[in-house]
Length: 260
Length: 161
Image (cartoon, rainbow over all chains, first blue to last red; front, side, top):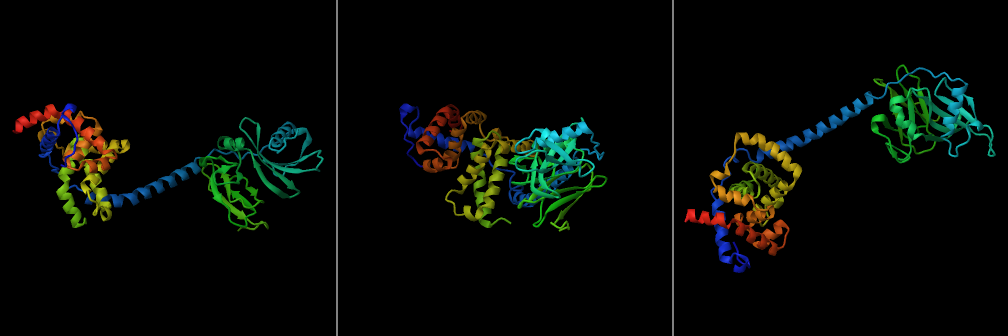
């Protein structure tokens, strides 16, 4: 040991005492030997670690794959029962679709022009507008309690989507338990978020949309086909809510309706 | 296969590093586990570490860092509980139990200073550098530690002498 401990006797110990006590302390521990390490040391530990790290990585990847698969397979129970719309329900649909408008209109100014499909999608229009008549395509769903929930609203020209979806986040968040049809929602900003709000991955399957895609079509056994039009580029991602235990296919269509 | 230089280093320094850790941690099994891990890391970094001026200090420092890691410590304890059933060194068989108890009663910083300064025989400056504290603080810790141990050490001196 080097010197220079710089302690004075009035602190309790002199330098000599410190030196002597340190020596005795070292001697006291000298008999201690690492007796059983030769056989177990590090070479084997390091080698097992080198083997273990890729194995753990593989295990983690497999685990996540299983979890993702399990999540996608345990999505909500869907009902393919068509919605029968009566007049009061029509009003409810209008009201809920109107709630998605940028500048909410009184539902009395809207009218259902056409139920394009038997259920789930309505084309509505404004009755009066200083800017001219507008058509809206409104996706909605019927909740288990019988109420309606608007999913998305497009402004459309006859037969053509002009700009893409406005999505009801509250509706999306409830769909996992209550939706009764396939829903495709475009995601604008990043995978897994809509309008900056993160959508739990467990509620959806995310997919990247190939370049040139004009619409996405999802087909599931025993369920009506669902198609979402994607007009404004770039919209690189979409979300699909799928029924339980369904083996669904996703198709990407170009502007001519042909598969990409 | 470990390089020959590493094997030499391991053979020559394992005991002193072990003693240093036995001063610092509270069980020989934990000291062994920490030492194994830090030597493993030394082997992993041997290309760089081989030129290190104080390799023993590096090993002990790494072990002490691991010791501070709460999560690591919990894992270590889990391993120890299994490992210690197979082989366990009872430090009290080698070191006077009263002295050992007195050492283990010291604050951790003081034990670390004793481990590096006394057991590994590092200089004050080296100890300070390894522990990330001022040299004056090393002296203070050592002084306080020895003052606290004096009774037990006097007994040790009496027994040896």
